[in-house]
Image (cartoon, rainbow over all chains, first blue to last red):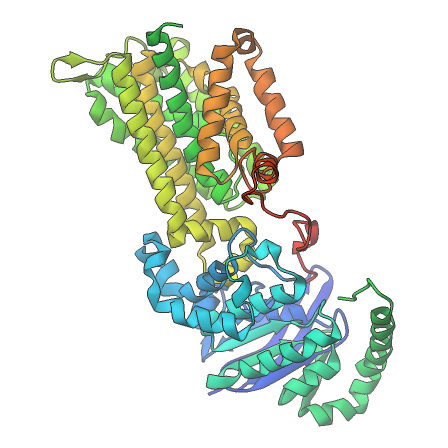
Amino acid sequence: MALLEIDALVVRFGGLTALDGIDLTVEAGEFVSIIGPNGAGKTTLFNVIAGAQPPSRGQVRFDGRSIRGFGTTRMSYLGVSRTFQVARPFRSLSVRENVRLGAAGRQTLASARTLAPRRRATDMTRRVDELLALTDLERKADHKAAELNIGELRRLELARALAAEPRLLLLDEPAAGIGADGMRPLARLIAGSREHGLTVLLVEHHVGFALSLCDRAVVLDAGRVIADGPPDAVRTDPLVVNAYLGRAASAQAQVARAAAAPGSVAT
Amino acid sequence: MSLDYLIVVLVTISIYAILVVSLNIVVGYAGQPNLAQGAFLGIGAYFAAVLSVRYGWSFWWTIPAAVGAAGVAGFVLGAISLRLREDFLAVTTIGLNFVVVAIFQYVPFFGGAVGVYAIPLPSIGDHQFGNADFLAVGLGMLAVVVGISWYLERTWFGAALLAIKDDETAAAATGIPVAPYKIGAFVLSSALAGLAGALYAPFISAVTPTSFGFSESVVILAMLMFGGLGVIGGAIAGAVVLGALPEVFRFISDYRLLAFGSILVFMLRFQPQGLFGEHSAVLATIGRVVPRRLGRRDAGSGPGRGPASDGPA
């Protein structure tokens, strides 16, 4: 059985149709990149899967169950973790506490254990330490998240999401705001997170980055799936080239120019 | 200043300190605006007053009743808060003061405009309470409230409240049940305000509706904002400094509201985290003067708290 099944999904915001009949099936263990121009509906799709956005029509099943009416907290308990397009750390907590909250999960946060001292929860110490090492945040572990730079915030979000030991990881533009030299370690990190059979959905603006990581790419345009297949096939799909890659290529050229000029980072 | 007068002032300050430290749970930890702490004090005080005057309850039994009544009211406010954005919540909590005062004023059971008076002094055995006893109980209650807050900061619940303050969306995505946690913070905070009320009623020996309205809530919030949001020590400092001020400088008590309102405005403008809170100018100055590095680096290396936290959909 597929881990995620999306059936004729429609999301409307007033007169705007953000998602217009999406069909998508993701098998457990797959790494799927979702690409498409701005406004194609990528983040909206993520919001639906994460339980943050109720569908206007259609159905989403996670692990065989309809997620209708499930909020984000419940989806996180079912095993869906996410990162955000704009990093959303808990600024007044330390980096370690951020990751520990991610690891706490249902058995702590939705039970009387929430009233126990956090120090007592030594069972998650090792996992949290491993994640801090993996994301290269050990040295910053006891800093407040508010003190991190953007690359560190990206890694922190990833660590917090992974701490929950999710079955499905939603990565919403994890490379946004990171310079070219930050991308390679991030790519290694994301690729590494696939161990243990984790299923990953990646929304990404940097097409090359997204296609290099995934084993399947889905292209959205104006709320519809216009291509779905192996990255190489998608890259050369004439529909995709027309609808998206042409524009993206020029956009990337712009980014490259902007990067050459100091002080301006496109997100 | 006679010793007895000093003790009276200290009891007043300890009542304020209880209110401020408990308000800090909702405002400082959970990040929810609350301008109704005076109303919760009133609910606790009225319950204690009515139960002891009309039903002859002993002081010690009125304490859990006052705590419970204020806690129930806090539950109602917490449930309301879930549906409101922060700015509307602030306005709603202001409105709550007027609702509570109106109920005390117009429901005959609560004694109308004169309120409830001749509240008996508490006693232990044959010994009737004097001011020193009130002080002992007040400090004991304060110790309990501080202990609860101190413990709360070390629990998962406490960390989750900070997470909710920082970013509700991310908190929910991280598995924090935002709604029950917020309600829990409101219940705890207002129940502890009710505790202060149970002491207030027999200490003042009368409760009148106008003692607890909006202005009292402003005073309590001003104390918290002055001392330091999210910091127990700061909350106590705020209650001590601003509680003592009108006693030390008599003329201030005539312009009390003006003074506290101005303090609130100035703190919000120049030190939104309070004198001893995060990015504290006081601590930073001490850190500069004292060679030990107490101050936290506050130059904007991180993205700061700009309006950029909501990504485009």
